[in-house]
Image (cartoon, rainbow, N blue to C red; front, side, top):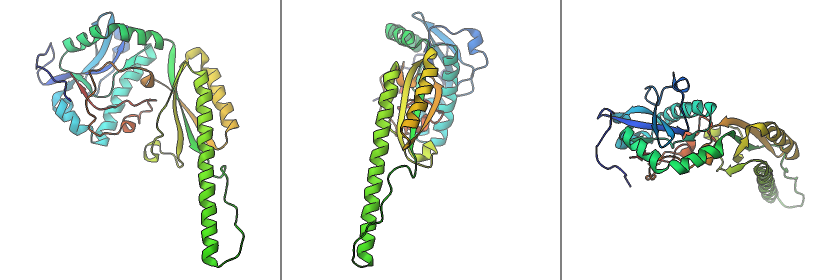
Length: 295
């Protein structure tokens, strides 16, 4: 359902929208210098309610409501745009706490961005305070071939067809047992890491076409970690890898806290169908794209 209202616009040109990258408590000019947004335009600050929205101008011919619905079906366009959006959010996160905006959050003008900050100021300020001094880290777990049980050669009489069926049943049983062993290991690893972290999320495993891994992913976890606790978290990941050889663990990060915020955006509209995992290709620990938002 569209949230488009009137066509009123602040200082932005009539054929240009305002792409929201994220919200911070402050944005020093030196932090924003040299950073470009999704359309190659410099990012800039929109202050209101004691907060700062970091935005960039976005031509409506490519980033308007209808154009976004088409473009978000194009995985090549989606990946390029997600990487550009993530680059801005990542730069902001290196300077301090940031609440990332969902991918494709476009406002008609700066005034609407400022109204969003005013309306959600208390919530956003609380989120920024909770994120201060913390980072998101990802842990992915992949099945290790050969570690899970193998089928034993079945005995018994019968002809060649009967022997084949016995072997096939044994192979399928071993595969199912191996998958269960890997799933149990993934659950145990996530539980241990979540117990250490400030907060944790377990996302759906990525398809191999996105992960690029030769074996199936069984764990796709995101963990909010105090910066001064990172060494302990990394050591725990290593210990868990030794304890659960059925899966290979991969620690990634730090990432902006995509998994642990409520994005500063209008009410979400129906997703046009572009997969969220494709927008997570920059490595973000949570779904960076959940469909366009327009206000």
